[in-house]
Image (cartoon, rainbow, N blue to C red; front, side, top):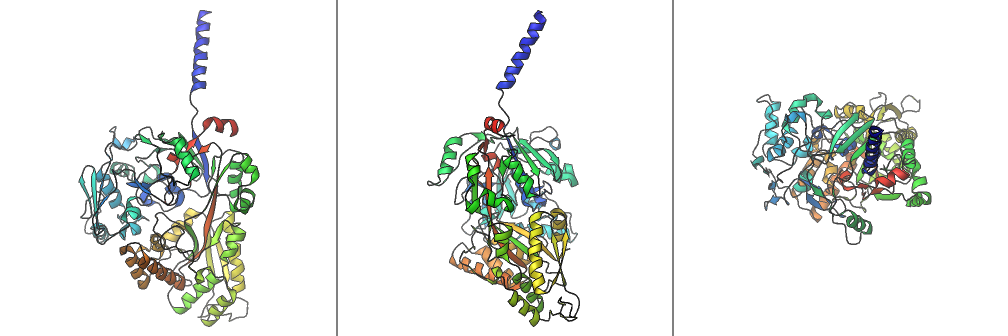
Length: 600
């Protein structure tokens, strides 16, 4: 009897302890597109980079609440030391920052040091890696890196990712210096705070996992990858070895919501959530229903087909407001575009006839209908590829890019010999060969609608359209290899400088950011001048020259800048959509009691 009573008391004590244990704080939401992997140097897609932004870190980041943006140190001690000519940048790292534990370190707790910064950036120049970040970093002109890559390409010496060069050196254990070939006034935001380039890795990890490095992300950030089912589920947990960081921010004085969050969260240890569970749900309806049923805490970007229900006339629907659901609605710093393969025999090229074809195809596309009908008012028609909220974006700028004009498009094709020679109702090329435009597109609903809209314009133009449906990841791979004719691509700003959007047209970036493989010396000269000039009226005038050249040659047709409406449950605290960066998980909190009570 005594033994039974003792057992009962132990069981009751255990149950009481369990009941008193804090509930795990779990952020649940969905990506509309599958990830590709988790090696920062090999990524170009938004969703994979969102994950790696919370596993890996860069030297500087942005204040979570500050609008306009404010750069702040992340791995660095203070702001960089900069020479008067903007060619030498020196950064000191914070001691005592460690990579998360991994077998590659063989039981040693591995501190992040300046040599890791050198290795991370040098590795991007390895020609065998074919890093999408190469073209962006290459044009910053870090002295010696391009020569290192060239020697490897010529077979003169094997590529050594850890080799220091003149422009990238670890001066001591915690100090790294960058020396640039030319002045780079915006090197801080272009590189040092750019999580789409940085994501500091350890050489031991890269060498240990080799071709499987995309599956084994090991960084210094607040989260670690715990579970991954490709194209289905990504689970991350709080990094148990993450350093002591505390919530602080600098919202504007008139930012009532930001000030309230700061008052509530200031001083809290980061990250505040224990676990992040990301489902991959490509179709809009199940993402919408998962949020409505409280199975998800956040709906990043209300699917356009449900925007009239969620945000009628741009305001949160009363039934959602009664549930305490929050809304963040803003014009996104992005452009959605059609990209033409400039190496393709039909839509590529620089002759007047080839340029006229692309311009006609662009004129036959109704961007306003995309914004209003397909995206349900969650977009505005774009005048250029430069994204809102960045330098170079001028709301007053107007161009042919936004025009929808079937008669002018027909006249262009007639003038340059794209006419119906055999009377079947479809135009042929000037040499008499068939004219069929091949559009590659993902399978989800919005892309089907976009293809239908394009088909309507093409039919009015008398041009055949063939649509090839496939997965986004497969089509990205084909686009990088140049195996496409026409495709869709989105460009989201990763820095406050609009020149990042223009990189898609910069000749040396062909094969990287420049998926069109557009090569125009006149454009490249303007682009290179933009790099050298400080911000100001002279630089803004050059932006207009660059935009006019893109409109004239039409390697891209920017159709819309998207308006995003994010919804979040009442138990999700502190959410604010980032402008130019991806990190936000470590800056939010979950009221787990409310989530358990009201959620599913």
